[in-house]
Length: 175
Picture 1 (tube, rainbow, N blue to C red):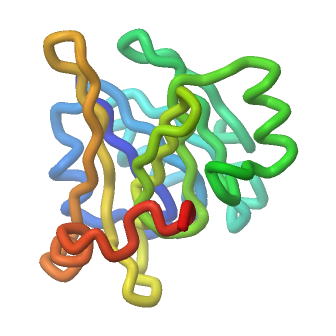
Picture 2 (picture 1 turned 120 degrees about the vertical axis):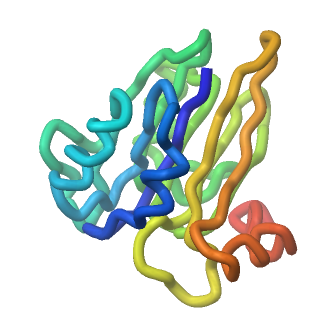
Picture 3 (picture 1 turned 45 degrees about the vertical axis):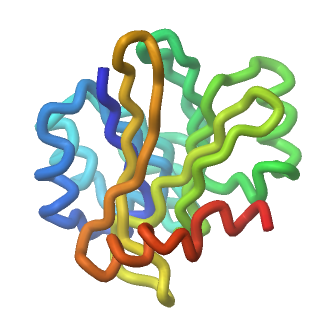
C-alpha cells in the first residue's frame, strides 16, 4: 500500500505532485487546500481524505477541521494546525486522548516533519504550494511493504530536493 501526503497547496497544484501521486492507493491532504478544484484533481488519481486549513476557514468542499481514516492497519488523524508534536494544541491533544492515532498528519508550518514520539508518528509533508522562505516545496509518502511501514519526502523541484537532502528544516518543530 502506498499513500501520498500533501499540504498547503494554497490553490496551486504543482504538476510534479500529480505525477508523483500516480499509482498511490490513497491521498491525504493536511489543509490550506485553497480551492475545491485541488480536491477534484487529486480525486482523479485516488481516494482523498482531506482537512481544511485556516485559509479555507476550516471548510473546503467536504473537508472539515479534522479527519480520521484507517489505511493498511494504521489509524491516521489529520489536522491542519498542530503547533508542535511535543505540545499539540489543546483540541488536538484532547482528540488524541479520546481516540489515539498511529499517525498524526499535519500542515500549516510548511516545514517537513517525520518523527515518532511516545508511540505516535507525526508527519508533515511540507508545503506543496507556493514557496515560502527557504523551505522546501514537497510531498510525502507512506508505504507498507512486507508488513513494515516507511515514510519519506520528495521535493517538487531541484532546490527543494537539495534542502530535503541537507536535513536543514526536517523536524525543526522539535528543536
